[in-house]
Amino acid sequence: MLQRDMTQIILGLGSNLGDSEDNLRRAIKLIKLELLTDVLESHIYKSAPLLPKNASADWNREFSNMVITGELKQDLTPVDFLSRIKEYEAHLGRKPSAHWAPREIDIDILAWGNEIIDLPALKIPHPEILKRDFVMKPLLEILPGWKHP
Image (cartoon, rainbow, N blue to C red; front, top):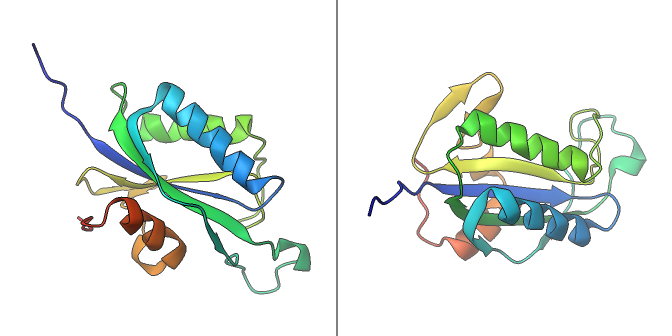
């Protein structure tokens, strides 16, 4: 029997509009349905939003954040995977908005195995991963030995 090459995908999820925790659960359900198997989920962590200067006061909404990891269910390139993730975000109510604006759901590809990808629309590992406590705490909760490639 042929064994498929398993690629570990790490995703960061965040929400600060609507029922944030339900938004995270709904996103995970979609991801498990089509994209990832053997999924591990961190606890949900709360954090203050990252805000640009002169951001509207209504942007100052607490985020619910978590990290999940799993193996690819189907052969998808990272770019194709990103496209699917963007479809899920739209399905879950995310609308085009300004950078760092409040959002129903945000799903970031944090890591793709040990690959380093540097494309205009996709950078893996996520460029800010090591600077964001709200990403590293849940990531290390489920993958304590994880090393940045």
